[in-house]
Image 1 (cartoon, rainbow, N blue to C red):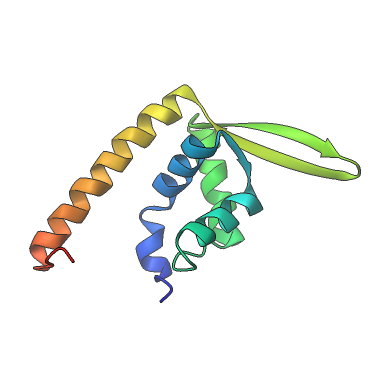
Image 2: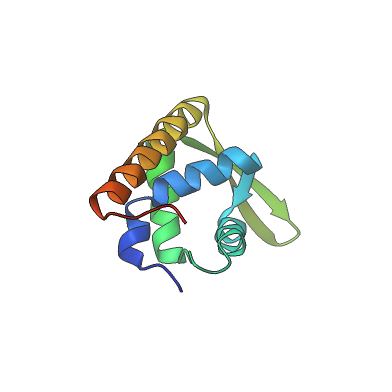
Length: 111
């Protein structure tokens, strides 16, 4: 089962921040593939959703970028800034609490 874009949209920034925290630096395609791999295909992030999210996080000062030249190719790597690390921790805590609240509201018992 692939999760709906509606479910992913609200947590995409948190997912990206956490992935960068776990991997130091990543480029866009690498990030999408790693999320797909870790979730066994249940979360598939499109380029159309990822790059606006990365640019927004960069504008907020939560990620930094580094450009590397690989022959004729240019690859832009994203890394978590110090403030990004703090925000990531806050957002992960918020999502955890939200999931607990949803479980209670929807009467979902742990498996």
